[in-house]
Amino acid sequence: MQRWLMYSNDVEVAAFEVQNSVIVGFLPSKPKLLPMQLRCASADGFTAWLRERAIDLNNLQHRELMKQLLGSRDRTTLALRTHMFSVSDTFTCFQEGEFIPRRKLCDPEEQNAASDFILLSSDTSLRRLSGATPNASTDGSFTKTWRFEGGAWWLYKLQSAAATRAEVAISQTLRACGWDAAEYAYAGRFRKRVRSKSFLQPGEFFEPYDSFRFFFDNPSDDDGVISNNLASLGPAFERDWRRILLADALFFNTDRHMRNFGVIRDAHTGTVLRLTPNFDNNRAYDANPGGYSANMLRAFMAEARLEDIENLKDLCASLESNGHLEKALEAGKAALKRARL
Image 1 (cartoon, rainbow, N blue to C red):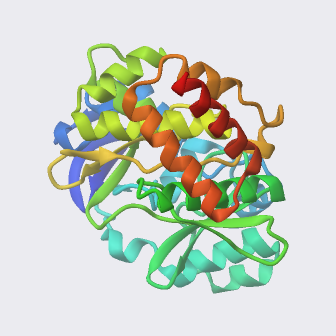
Image 2: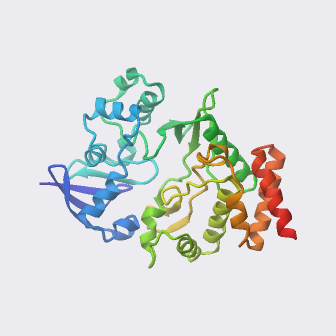
Image 3: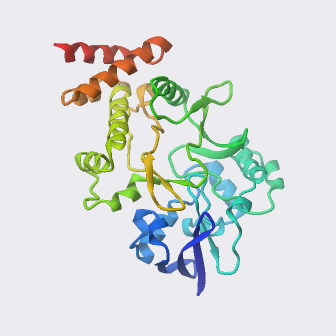
């Protein structure tokens, strides 16, 4: 039996026990600093959360990286052996007596060597690694990897040109309106790579709604319940969530699942600070598997509020100014015309 400790920003927040690579006990010591999903979690519940942090093994580059570095494909083992480090939050874990401060855990040069392997499919970069790299990627359907560039972390994704165009153009449109949206940019001349800048400040962590929903009395995944729950956090949360819903409707993003939105929390106090920016639009517009449709926008506008109409005006003005996503602009103008009748 091995005793492990879980940390947030180098502060011990929980302990757990591991036997033959299986977690058999989980005990929080500072519940208010934990993800909501873990405040009353069992060993099985903690295991489910932990396994979400392992490198995604659905594509060849990730599997080859883990094969060369760790020789394992078990998600619990991978998460533990890379100390469950993630760029998108502040949590780490170590066997008792083996703690390493977070700032030393992930060396940018080593992390970039791992990302070179992911992006270039070359094993020469791995020679610069002294150990297993933490969080070379994140879970999801596309090849992804974090890189440290210009003093910031950037998440790279390899995907289709249509997906990349959607993410960059939607990001530019939303940010031009002054809305909170992740910064996306093309990476490479073939436009099949995109990078997005981490939207976290020091001492903050991202908690997906899939975990944060356990904060509320009703953790259902019903759309109306989600909207009511987020609105209960305050006017800014409700405003930003309705903007995400409107953008999804206008750009036909049908992939807004509970892990690509959530909240940003203070790692020192556990306080909920704000809703996450709008991010992950690589299955929107022409990258939507079904092609673009205005059906979601018509359904949204059928129950639109006055502020939704004003927000749609802003989006259309931004699209017209930048010449982005012409079909969405046409659909938006048609919706505004119907709203005036």
